[in-house]
Image 1: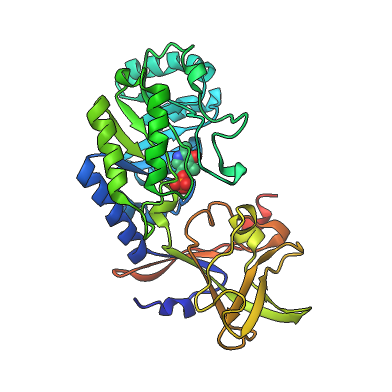
Image 2 (image 1 turned 45 degrees about the vertical axis):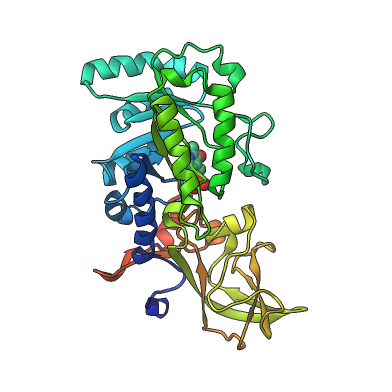
Length: 383
Ligand SMILES: *Cc1c(COP(=O)(O)O)cnc(C)c1O
C-alpha cells in the first residue's frame, strides 16, 4: 500500500485510511452474514461521519451514549438502525431521543419506570416501532484497568441479578451487557456463561440480546469462530436476535496521526518536541495509559538513536513515549503515530491553546481529501 500521503498532509493531522477501514468492515460484515447478527458502530470510539457512508454499506447502524451521538447517527446513517444507551436520560432530551432511536436501553428500574409511559404514548401516536432494553451487570469482567471495568465495585452501569429480580419487565424486549475491553472471544464465551447463569430466567421473555463492545474482532489474532459459536448459541437456545456494538474494532489500525519534530532538547536523553500533544490529541496515551506505535521506530534498545517524544504544551507529563530509530531525527522530520482513528478525534481538546489536528480521509476512489481544518476560532468559541 502506498502511504505517500504522510508527506502531503499538513501537521498535526489525523488521516483515516478508508482502504484499511474497509478491510475491517469486510471482516465484520462476514460475521453478520455468517450468523445473521447485527453489528453497530459504537460512535464513542469513532464519529468521523465523513466515513459513515462507507460504514453504512457494511454494518447495521450506529449506537450512541446520548442524544448527540444518536442524532449524528440518525443524520449520517439514517437509513440504518440507531441504538442508544445512557447511564441516565434527561427528561428534556427524551422526546428527541425517541424520534431518532430504534432501540433505547435503560440503566435502572427507576429510569425505565420514569420513561416507559412516554415510550408507549410516543409509539401509539407516531406508529414508530421502538424496542426497549435494560442493561445488566453480570458482575463478571476480566478488565484489569479499573477505570475501564464496568463490573467493578459499586459500578453504576447496569442492573445486577438482585435488582432485575425486583423489576416488572413488561415492555422490556432485550438485555444489554457491556463488560469487555479490547478482548478476544474466549472472554466473551466466559462472560456469556455468567450472563446465562444469572439471567437465563428472563431470557425467554426477550427478543434480543446485545453483547456490547470491547470485542477486538479485527485484531489479527482474534478467534472469530468462538464469536460465531457464541452468537449461534444465544440464537438457538433462546431464539434471540443478537447485536454487537464494537467501537475500536471498526476503525482499529485504520488511521494515523502525522506530526512534525519542532525541536530536540537534551536532558539525560534526547527529547524531541513534536507539534502534537498526548494530552490534547491522543489523551488515551495518558489515560489508559499506553505507548502508541510509530512508523519506523522500535522500543528503547532496539535501534541506535533514542528519543523521548513530548508535546508542545506546558504540562510536564505531556509525554508520548520512548522510541528508537536507525538514523538520527532532525527538526522538520515527520513522525507518524499508528492506530489513531479511534478514541482520538472524539476525545481531543484545545488545552493550552493547542490547535486541533486537521482530519484527512484517504480512499482509493478519491485519493486524499482534507475533511476538516480547525483554527483559532475553534479554540476561542468554547471558552
Ligand atoms: C464503549 C462502549 C462500546 C464500544 O466499546 P469498544 O471498546 O470501543 O468496542 C459499546 N457499547 C457501550 C455501551 C460502550 O460503553
